[in-house]
Length: 258
Ligand SMILES: *[C@@H]1O[C@H](CO)[C@@H](O)[C@H](O)[C@H]1NC(C)=O
Ligand SMILES: *[C@@H]1O[C@H](CO)[C@@H](O)[C@H](O)[C@H]1NC(C)=O
Ligand SMILES: *[C@@H]1O[C@H](CO)[C@@H](O)[C@H](O)[C@H]1NC(C)=O
Ligand SMILES: *[C@@H]1O[C@H](CO)[C@@H](O)[C@H](O)[C@H]1NC(C)=O
Ligand SMILES: *[C@@H]1O[C@H](CO)[C@@H](O)[C@H](O)[C@H]1NC(C)=O
Ligand SMILES: *[C@@H]1O[C@H](CO)[C@@H](O)[C@H](O)[C@H]1NC(C)=O
Image (cartoon, rainbow, N blue to C red; front, side, top):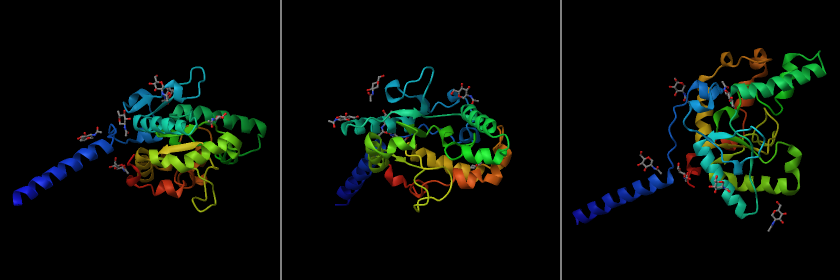
């Protein structure tokens, strides 16, 4: 009798182990480092970053898309599932390191400065930060975040764009994705960037990076571009990096069973 029970439990433990091994897809555990979180790297510095196949991206000459491999696998699966519902999900933007983000930032900064030389750096930064992050504060540095199908709010307000957005809101969580910049002032968050229907984050990795950011990054780390001296006044960590959809902040590992 005892022996049968023992065999039963050993077998059970074995089966649990096996099913765990199959449902838990192990990421290459790349240790989280300051340089990764702040975007201070060359993409090839991290073996976990992979090129995204062309058929999953919006093609622009010379543009290369990379993602953390776990985020890429999850996006591939979501792309295939969406196709079954006649929905095409294509990346418009994915990983962006510090220098890439800085190029975006400086271009917008100069345009706004030229448009109105009397504007202060702080006013310009706040204007840009309706949609774009200061270099060192962008989730796109992480390789876990992506812009899907369009970056125009209007695109997602009707027609095919709205159908796609509704599909993502309903289904993306099954693949590990959450929308960090959900509508403002609807109880899910009240500060930071405007609504971004296109921006989705692969939570199993990005929630670890956000936690690292919270614990280990300070305003001294935010420098090297126009307006960076105002980052603390603007509260770009508290009101932007950390002001995301509550559903993403409270993301539970239990979602991770796809
Ligand atoms: C995950 O890692 C564990 C321990 O290293 C291993 O036993 C398991 O087979 C791995 N699972 C997958 C899906 O690679
Ligand atoms: C697990 O990883 C493998 C190879 O890295 C990939 O092909 C597969 O799609 C992943 N599966 C899941 C469930 O994440
Ligand atoms: C994309 O192309 C690759 C080959 O480069 C192919 O293996 C994959 O199935 C294609 N994926 C989709 C979603 O069409
Ligand atoms: C699939 O979506 C396209 C628009 O992207 C539409 O033109 C077509 O009629 C749809 N097909 C079906 C079967 O719903
Ligand atoms: C940033 O990424 C680009 C490619 O997008 C690359 O050319 C550049 O060398 C990278 N380096 C740094 C330090 O940001
Ligand atoms: C913050 O940095 C310390 C020292 O490198 C590290 O031990 C800790 O795990 C980091 N915090 C997070 C959330 O990763």
